[in-house]
Image (tube, rainbow, N blue to C red; front, side, top):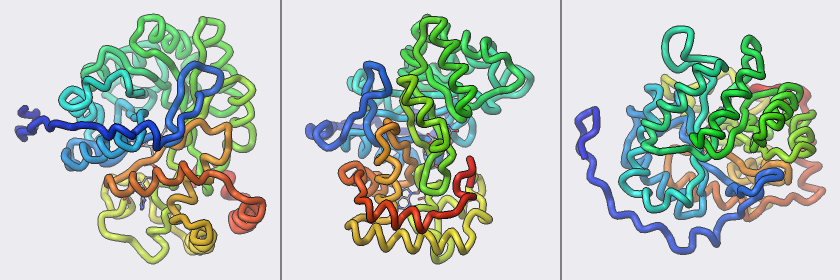
Length: 349
Ligand SMILES: NC(=O)c1ccc[n+]([C@@H]2O[C@H](COP(=O)([O-])OP(=O)(O)OC[C@H]3O[C@@H](n4cnc5c(N)ncnc54)[C@H](OP(=O)(O)O)[C@@H]3O)[C@@H](O)[C@H]2O)c1
């Protein structure tokens, strides 16, 4: 198969691990019929046109072999925009087609995607056109889950909700969700969708040991409404792995030119905290990365933890966190005493 950039890629014969479903925990998503793996894989970084296609394939296959059935995309993941969907679409077409019904594929629209007034935010025109484009790139008839990627205060919420409901009624997405909405707007969206006969399946929210805004009121709102929560950037883009405690490792996200991770997030006080947390992880027999992921999954209101990765070996390490997601009272107290800093309850790092 020759791709647009002229590289010839041979489809591989991929045989998934027969034991894949015995290794993962699956959590019901709020009050719905669907289960999500306790850990899901996001394709924000490392799946674009500039990244290694063979590494992308290895990460997808490793995930599926470990029971990760949920893959999260967005229209603008790349770079360039759209290319992560194309990468996933190629792997799906060539190697995973016969497993389509075992996969939960999500995509989103809400951020900048194409020029002009119709390629951003929350209008009906943008959301419907964007999903049609995503389906072509993914080579799918439908996605399992479509999100409005961020709230848009300029567009009436009824218009955005109407577009989401129609997308479900047309069968282009089986479920819909929202991302980055605060608790108040979340409740509004849930109610308006309900009025249109559509259940808001899930909220995708930033949540980690360093970014805890969801604890204030969002998690309870979702729980009360029977809506799931999938926690993104659970490692604070890698900071919570401890990899930046002694500088910038080669090829880490912070060293890349297109990275969103800002060097000012790597201040000494924070890195010292992570170093102290690593001692607790060690006592638990975990790596710091695993403990940070276990800590997010410890909350039963979190349906799934949405990781990113740059290698299959990271996924292999990370998935072990699912097996150790409880914390003793002593561990919880120690962790809280280290994290004790009001600024960590902000929405961003
Ligand atoms: N809805 C939204 O607005 C939104 C926003 C952001 C993300 N998301 C979703 O959430 C997903 C995850 O976000 P994220 O990538 O920021 O998640 P993350 O899990 O916080 O960070 C992932 C990065 O951490 C590093 N890492 C992972 N495992 C490691 C290990 N075992 N040891 C050392 N380093 C490790 C890797 O970076 P290196 O390159 O340094 O190895 C990896 O790319 C995205 O793909 C996307 O699907 C959604």
